[in-house]
Image 1 (cartoon, rainbow, N blue to C red):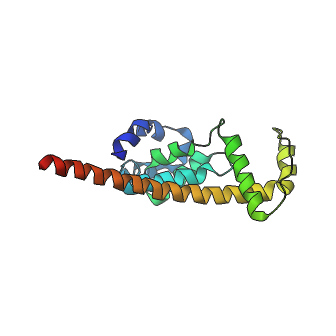
Image 2: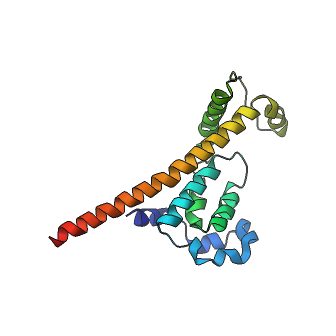
Image 3: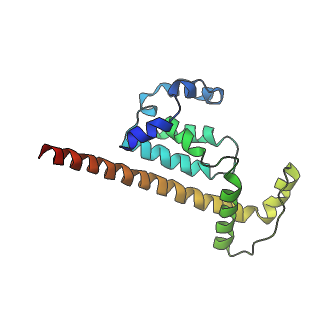
Amino acid sequence: MPRKFIKRFLPDHNKIKATKSLNIFGELLHDPNLWHLNRRSAKGAFGLGLFFAFWPVPFQMVLSAAAAIGFRVNLPLSIATVWITNPLTMPPIFYSAYLVGSTVLGTEMTEFQFELSWQWVISSLSTIGPAFLLGCLICSILAGAIGYFGLDGIWRYSVNQAWRRRKNLEK
């Protein structure tokens, strides 16, 4: 079942509760629904995590945690899923988002040289910014929806297979 598979990769809930950046949520972290793993909480958390993974902002985990608390879905899964965008995967993912945005806007892709400076970020907002941000929004919505409905389908299929196996054993 997906539950057993997912639980192997989830961080311990006590470690998450001890994370300093999540202290802003205080008593809200004690809601048992945030730690329970069922189909509803898993698909919601997976969708939220993928949704926030495509946001080009720092503290994606805090945003995902806030949304998980608001929607009362599995907090560890929501936080862990955000890490699909990590320092190794961010460049190709965000470049792909820029391609999507350029295609949707119908703008010509401009050559750019990345620099790790605020000056570059500010100057790029007017050139590649609109296409990049629109692409991030589109990819964010698509990834969240695919994650939500995809995990729901996998979970349902897994449960149906388990019931079939159980039914065949009874015969």
